[in-house]
Length: 130
Image: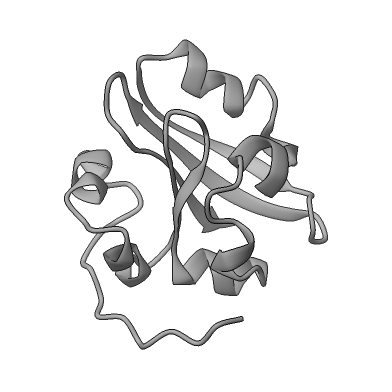
């Protein structure tokens, strides 16, 4: 993994009612300061931001995921109706669900927060261990 400088801390809660808006207000490098996992991706599902917390937790360097398709290359275990399809079907998405990641790691229970807004250039998957 490429070393990164220690980020400052962003006072942001996983359950914040305005989480999508607050993530939108951050630059992609500032996502490293978020105290839970965040994957930012564009309308073509290409990963544009992968924060330090998630990189460290998953053991996957950002260089291996940036500009790759989130649901095909990075986390194919989420390419289903519970996760990936929600971003297509719901124009105003803010949903939490318990999930188990199974790709590139042993089964890992997490809490996901799926965030998206029609017309916004970035969508997010926030990840918190359970």
